[in-house]
Image (tube, rainbow, N blue to C red; front, side, top):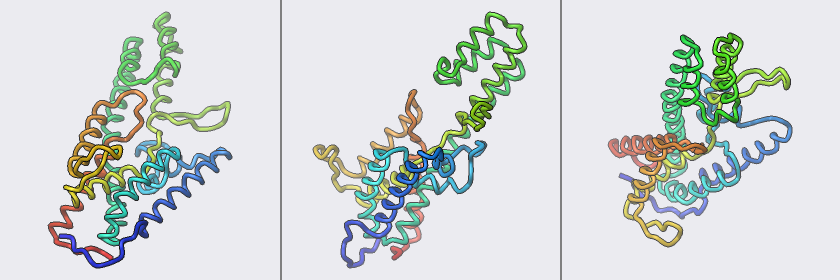
Length: 286
């Protein structure tokens, strides 16, 4: 059980304040370096483990990177809104441990889902390479390539359909798929370009969702107001949010670049850590 100790409530406690400051600094730094052709998210954002850009430090550093000001604002607002209360109760040490455990758990869950998705695509590519025909190329495009027209797949398919025995077109089709998955080297710009397996995931959302879960766990009957109008108990709000993320994760639509399973991973690891602390009857860490 949590033991409350008499203390002055801080509107912006130490860890929450510093997390907000650090995240804001990284966004400003990312924006400034972009003008010089340096993509900080490429180094610090979380990449799939077989990506050419993956680094183990990204399991933590991706928590401090955000795509834009709106992304940063909503994450930091939620962190302040729910995290400030929890940090005032737990103290800075326990809250910091909890935050990073949830963030790391979110990253691991996200990578696990990517492993499942990309593993299926790599298997399909391996099967295609065993029989690189026009029909197999068309099947791969239909099942695994988003927006094939914009990427040149549709034009290549039409050209190959007009000359199915052409070995040059067959080799070009294999190269298209290889570069679509893993990127390659552009001789004109003399730079490396990314494939779909090289996309970076950024944001503190996984850790913030863990904080949101902790708030619902600790204060289940506290009423929150959706759009400042509609009251809902915290436990139902968290359950509703989790259900939406689960639905969205399994029904990922085109253009949806949100890592829904990372959010759920943050909640899952929050639950595991909270139950562990509860079972060991640990006192707050100050």
